[in-house]
Length: 79
Image (cartoon, rainbow, N blue to C red; front, side):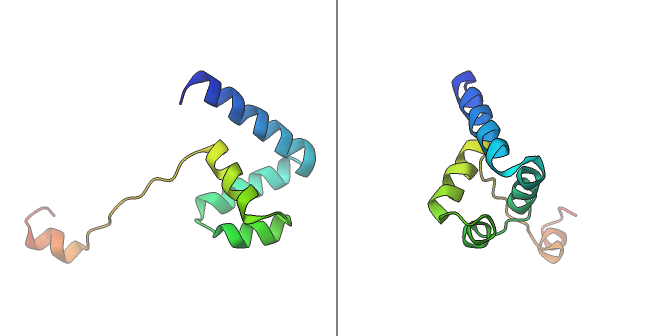
C-alpha cells in the first residue's frame, strides 16, 4: 500500500467512525472478516452495495486461498 493509499484509507475510516461510531466500525470490519456478503452489510448499515464496495476497497483487499482436502494431500505425500 502506498502512503497516499494509507492516508486515504485513514480518512475514509475517520469519516465512517464520525458517521456511524467506533462500535459500528468494528462491526463492519468483523463482517468483512466473516466474508459477509455486501448485500447483507448494505442492509445492516442502510447504504448501497456500491458504498459497501467502496469501503471494502478502502479498508483492505480480498485474499483467496485454495484449501486442499487432507485426503488429497495424503495421497500426494504432502501430509
